[in-house]
Length: 459
Image (tube, rainbow, N blue to C red; front, side, top):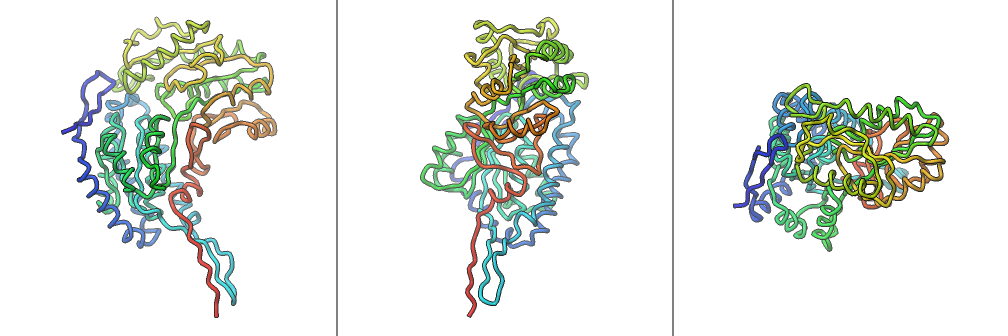
């Protein structure tokens, strides 16, 4: 029997393990979800919405268990209190717009014709969720999918093995029928076999580019709809009129919070030459104030990365950049807890350029490169010189200037004077190798449903 294990970044121990479900047993679970879907969809929309919100509330009641579990599973310090703020904000927002998003579009209602477009649930939605924000990323799809009348099967990342189990427990205890929302422990081969068999009507995957390609290959020829949120290398651009202190505070937090393990974390920054020296000096001081350590300690402000192999990638990128002329500015002596494994000190690199993987490939760790630029045109070329496109953070007092740049940026979201935030009222989407589709907002409901047209000619 294959066991799926969560290796804790705190001490390298096996924190949790579960047996991988055999293929035939997984097929039976999918069959139950399919059977439960039409009765679930026939319930009034408001009933479905309220049951989902009750599930969210029940999970909030488990905070004392959830927060330390997250620290053990993926290393986020307990002082930050889990993901409940964003989890609740997103759930409440989609609940508020569900009726609007799913309302029929009436084209004509006359003596001669009735013409309208309605939205119908896809059926069984398969959510493959990531470990970095395991509750918030999952709820982006789970909440609107269930509200729209789909049934949901979640498979969570091994690094956050217990999250799907806990979410389903909370929702079922709140009254969501067991077969409507199920958690399955699946290995990659079984997941791919289920996808290839056309078991699902829609798939939402959040993870690596390689993982997204594996999902697409498995689904080839099944015509299964999917949403993919994959890699990122999000830039910030600090213009000469920016609020310097606000830019430093926000961008450094965006680069290093959660040990840099954020889908829309800042990984490269371009600063106008007039502010460059001051920005770098203030950024190094900001980052140097972190306390790296055990995430169960309430004094810890920076925990370990989720796995030692993730930290290895960060160290290798930094070493490669330094060998090519980059300069590391954060004194490693400030972080004696850096053990060469999952515990890794934050770092800022200067004298970097786009010949270095550090400035072009996803790092996904607490390290950022800063480059000097002379103009918007130069910054624009550098920001677009990337195979990913999730968010861009622009720092200026001039909204018109930011809008003009935004129109030329190859990205899913353009921020001005903020970063590393998911607004549930705006669709969360990406371009290029960051993926396709979109979640949240009214458009998120559209991705989780299909349109059906009614064209009635009256006698």
